[in-house]
Image (spheres, one colour):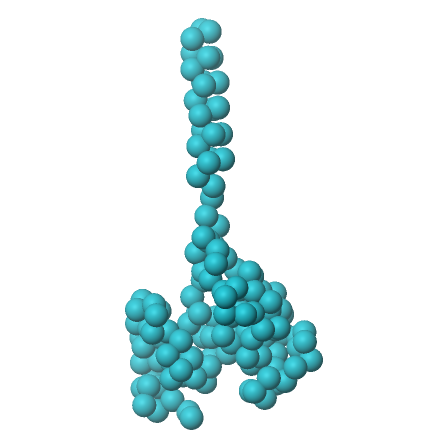
Length: 135
C-alpha cells in the first residue's frame, strides 16, 4: 500500500516539474484596443475611422504584446515564444474583404504561406479575385 502511494506521489511530483519546466504555450491573443470598437487613441489613421482594424497600428500589428492602437516599433514585434493568431483572420473578422485585399496587396501574408492560402481561398469564396480587390 505504501509503495503504491509513494509511486503516486512521485508521479504527481514529476508531473508538476514537467509542467513547470515545459510551460504551456497558450496562443497570443489580439489586443483589446484592436477589437473593442472604440477609437482608443483618437487618431484617425490613414484609413477613415481609425477604429480597430481601421487604425494603422492595429492593421499591421493587432496582438496582445503590442501597443494596441498606438504604434508598436518593429523591433518589439513577434518577440514572444507564444503562437500568434492569423493576421488574415483578424483582417477578415474585424474588417472584411477591403482590409484583406489591402493587406494582400501590401504583401502582409507573404511571410506565412498558409495564411496566404487562407486569404486566397477566402477571397475566391467571396468571388473577389485578387486583381479585382478595390484600390
